[in-house]
Length: 92
Image (cartoon, rainbow, N blue to C red; front, side, top):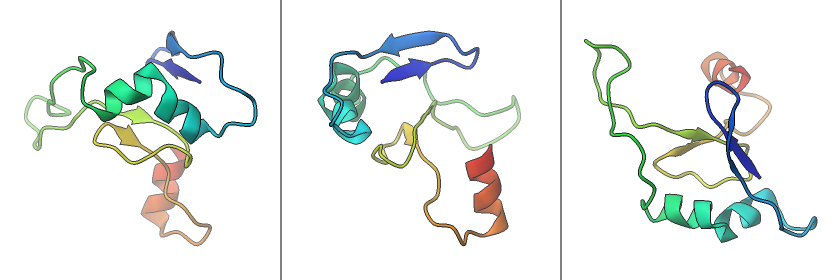
């Protein structure tokens, strides 16, 4: 499991899980996953997307459907018959 920043630099790499473990299980048992779930990572404070926009938005990690929904974890919408907006979100 790895975390990359917006410039595609690896910032966290977790090696050592067995191949049969799911991504969600690896995440839940990693130090990174535990700290993120318990709000113990020192993430930047919420801020607006632009100087004049509202509301304040958190910094988030984007994972696949194996990851849990958490305040700082986003994942794609599930299903194949999605509304246009959800399809665009999943694509981007």
